[in-house]
Structures are given as structure tokens and as C-alpha cells.
Length: 107
Image (cartoon, rainbow, N blue to C red; front, side, top):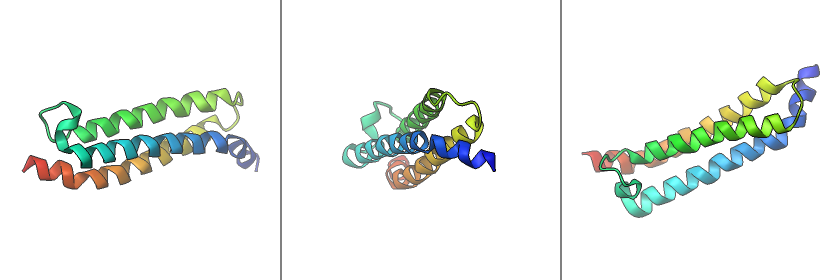
């Protein structure tokens, strides 16, 4: 199983992307709960989701940059996939945490 060893080399980068996603999600969730819907500067109550989308986009870009810095083409798609999948899972949890604030403000 050559693919497993290729992914193992990239695990520090994968975890780094997950950590960046967690930090960004914590900031968005904390701001959403402390300042409500108006902290994004938008009139729409769903602005926290736009902020989470930006955090996710930054995570995807970070995944590409970090995995290209590994300088190994073998397993690149697998490593990037793991990075993005983990960041997406973090965003899913953060979106569920922000839902009461976002939906409460829209009604």
C-alpha cells in the first residue's frame, strides 16, 4: 500500500488545515453569539454563514498551499481531499452552532 505512506507524510499539513478551520470557526461562532447578526455589517441575518463560507474558502486555499509545500506529487489529491473534508466537517458543526442565532434573527 504505497498510498498510505504518501498520505502519512502529509498528516501534519492536514492537521494544520483542520486547526486553521477550527480557529476560524470559533472566531465566527464567538462573534455571532456575542454580537448577534449585525457584527458582519450586513442587514441580512444570515451573515454568519457568509463568514463561515469565507473561512472554508481560506481553508481550501490553505490546503492547496500546505500540500504543495510538501513537494511530493504522490498522494497529493488524497492529502488535499482529507484536508478539505476535515475543514468541511468543522464548518458543518460551526453552521449548526450558528443556526439558532441566524434563524432567530430572521423571524
